[in-house]
Length: 612
Image (cartoon, rainbow, N blue to C red; front, side, top):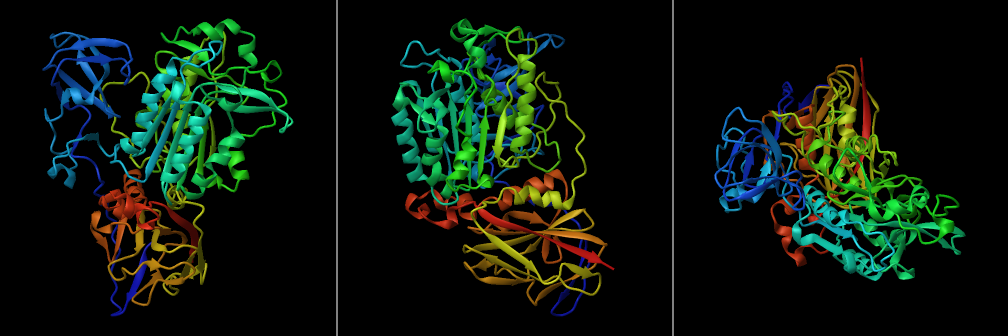
């Protein structure tokens, strides 16, 4: 679509489609795949980005390495097996702190922010890493051994702690906002206390990530009238079992405040197969596809509930929804279906956790070319890896990851990574994405809304005659905030930020107020082509920093190519509060109950048809 704009002085101008460049808040230096790095001290090349992973080679200081990827404090590199240039290459992981990032730096690939001048030299690769936000929180629970010696240990749960940390960091959770409960720290009452403490810390519009790695179980609950599913805390017993119903009750206040709550259970609630293979539960099952030992993540409490029958409980999303939570604002990932067994790899951690981590940080593909990696795309990627890991296993079939709630949730607004020169064995097959319509492009951002914030948009006319009718609509919100209007035109080529614009910066709206747009000084007349225009109207708790945009203007508006990169950059901007970016909200007193420190927004979609 193009618009004819009737300004006060009735001048006309053509709308040009230009690229939108968002100066993302990234740390000091961006490195490019293929860049040559040098080790600054002796270090070890490991098979995975874990301190416990197998050592592939010992590297001396001064060794040259070719960068492939950088994730969560680790760097994937290619190293030569000898000084001979024709020698075979080996791919592995080294600590990011063990290499000199200035070596061979490409000025073209660098993206510098003001943090560099301040001497903060943390590193990132492309736009796939973004800085921590004070309004993000994580609770990471892992139980590798239990008080009851009869409960099978799960050595990989200790590794899941590091993997979950990398996931939290990818979602911009600062280290200071990550709370850990490990082994004997993870008693039922300690978990309950940690959730209560988290409830007090979380403010309106914050985002929370909760990760549990340990045994799932079932037990008979007379009140529920049958067997219920639960997470097994360290001590077991009545105080050491937390059902989905209890978890939902404890999370109720958090879900009422958060922009998004993401909960992942790397556990299973089915003992059907494990019951018939008791020896496997204690010594692991060797799979020829990997060196790790697989252990079922289920511990039976009673024989009557060991098999998936007579189950009265419901998954966490259903339980949370029953307390009033909205599915749009919750993401729940389970390692397996309720009648399947999920597994712990004692060398690399839970299969679900390690593969969700790899897909979130590197391997997931933007299948729909939307400009961002959604939770469903991460799940699909991880499922392929689980299937491959369990292929040809003589005892078990692959377990299936279950995603409930907002499958379109984008955990971090980073664009698709650059392809590396060397093929990776774990890389998924890249499919040719279908063409993305303007409506779908805006739906990507609409799906990130906080459903607790209600926005109503009403059009004066839903059909506009080209060259004759002008756009006219009203906006109303149940909360005060700042209005932003994005448009995907019927030409399906560009995205526009219609409001605020150079002619009208007054986008503050009060709760219950009706705002009429466009205003008289920037009337917009339909100019074709025939088709449907889609508008996304957002009411954000806090203003967005539009000065961070480096753009050529389409008249008074900014515009973006309707491609993956343009959409990713626009999404990153519109989901970030100005005060969170400029550090004002670091002060606890300033942040408490302050909507200006929230990234949350409500949103509504509006379709307008252009006709001859």
